[in-house]
Amino acid sequence: MLNTFVSSALASLEPSPNPGGYASPPRSLRRCLCMAVKVGTTVLLAALLASSGEAGTDVQLEIPLYKAPQQVMPRARIGGTLRGSEGEDPAIAALVPDHVGITVKQHPVLNWFLSKHTALPIKFTLIDERSIRALVERFIAPPNHAGVHAVNLEDLGFTLQAHIQYRWYISVIKDENSPSRDIVTGGMIERCEFSECMVLGATTTCTQEAVRTSAATGFWYDAMACLCDLITSDPGDTGLRKQRAALLKQVGLHGVAEWDLAQAHAGRR
Image 1 (tube, one colour):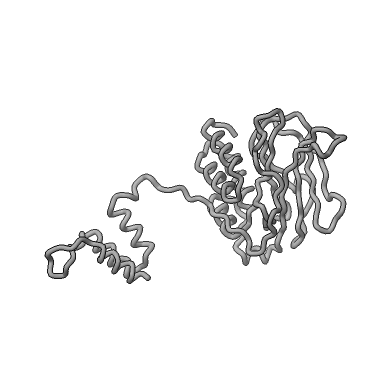
Image 2 (cartoon, rainbow, N blue to C red; image 1 turned 90 degrees about the horizontal axis):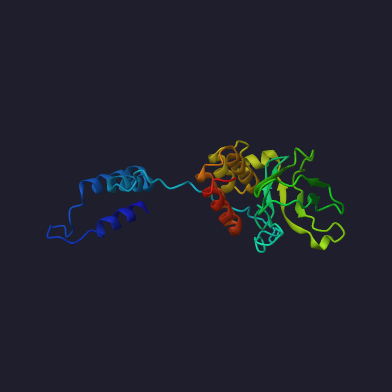
C-alpha cells in the first residue's frame, strides 16, 4: 500500500519536457517520499504537512471516538431529547448510549442532564434484571442549576456485581399520586470483571488520554464520568466541552451536546 501511495504521488505531477515525462519533484517532497519508504505512511503525511506549512499552530482537537461493545442490547435508553424544555417543566436526559453501557468500576458515576432548575422532587432508582423490586430508590437533592449532574453509587453504598445488567432511572416527580406524569430518563449499565476489563483495554485513571482510551474500548460510563470530572475541575476549558459534546452526538444526544456547547461559550457550568 505504501509503494502504491508513493507511485500515485509521483504520477500526479504535471507532465514536463524532461526525459522522464514528469516534472522533477520539489526537494521537500522527494525528501518526504524517501522518508515514507523507510518509516511508513504516518511519518510521510506529517512531513508533507510540515513542508507545506499546514501543520502550524492550528492543531486539531483530539476527539474521543466511542466504539460500542460487539454485543449490545438496543433501545436501552429512556428519554434523551430536549423537546418541551421551553415550557414550565424541565427536560432531563441520561448521558448514556441507547444500549447497555459498560464499566470497569464497582461504584461508577452515572451522569444525567437537567435543562433548568426545578423545585420538584427528583428520585433515583436502580433495578437489575433479576429483581422485581428496586435495589435502590432514593430521593436526591434537586440541583440548584441546569447542566450535567451525577449520581455516585459509592455515595449510595451500592456495589455493582459483575455480568449483571442494571437499569437506572432519574425521575422528576410532578404528582406523587400520579406516577404516569413523572418526567423520566434512564439507561442500562453492566460491569465486567476487573481482569476481563483489563484485557479489553480498560483504564482506572482519569486523564484526557484515559477518556479517549475508555471510549475507544467501549467503556462508555468510565469515559463520560472522567470527562465530566475534568470539566468540573476546569469548567472554562472549551476543549473538554467539545470532547463531551462529540461523545454525546455519537450516541444521538444532539440536544444536550448543543446546549452544553452554548453554555460553555457563556462561561457557565
